[in-house]
Picture 1: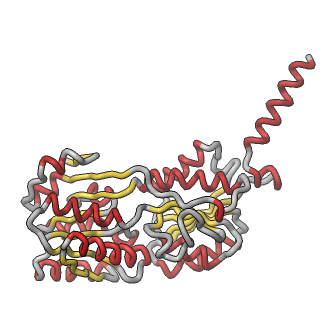
Picture 2: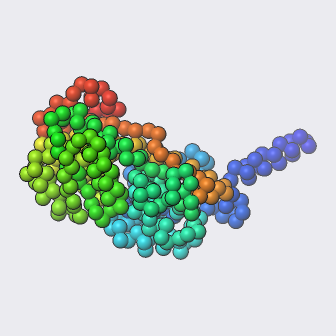
Picture 3: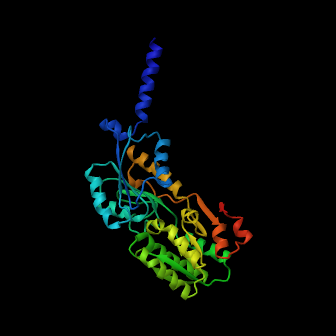
Length: 327
């Protein structure tokens, strides 16, 4: 009988130790504020974050609560939404979809821990002091460094060997897009390409931007990571096909929407890993002591249907390196 009582007591202790530190201290489920610049929480990347939490033993609505706030593409709303989440006394702020939400969260609080899921260059954006020692109350994951822009240009060169001018679509009002354009300039110079700036601030600018690229005989198009561009990925893919322009994107969602090809980090994997930061912080770790992690999984996707539409034959050596081919 005593032996049974001992094992029951031991099981209770082990279960208590498995709960998040905040829940142990207050008796309440920790509350997460989830801030996004997008227009939906139903996509696969957000699902990957929730999956990551489940893998760590968190059940939404039971031992963890999540307050969701969407800017729906209106970046000027991020500051108010961040303040709103802080007013709900959240334990952690998770800033999804680029540097914009993370910057808004950082400006709103110096004390509540912040985890960003996918900033392209958190140092240049002013989010952290360094990847190894982020400092302050913020840390998270980056989609990758400047080498990615060079890799995309190299893939374009291998696919369309004769081009010398590449056009870059970018939005000066988006911090991630600004960084992407600067890094693309650096990569283009190293590879000996002429870079054409296609500055757009809204969907009404798309057609004139593509016309400008065609008028100056740009042989290829680079579309960097941006939630603004992601929301209009179908339109961008259609315009690229209509212009018979070889385009490479930062995310496979563009290719699945009809774009030619993409190369970039697995964003879903980054979001899943962001859950581990939440877990560590709830268990007492400080963001300043958690290094910013870089991507470990990359995806190269090709759409052969799009290639056929623009009269392009993908070289066998390029095709062989694709992780996924859409027919």
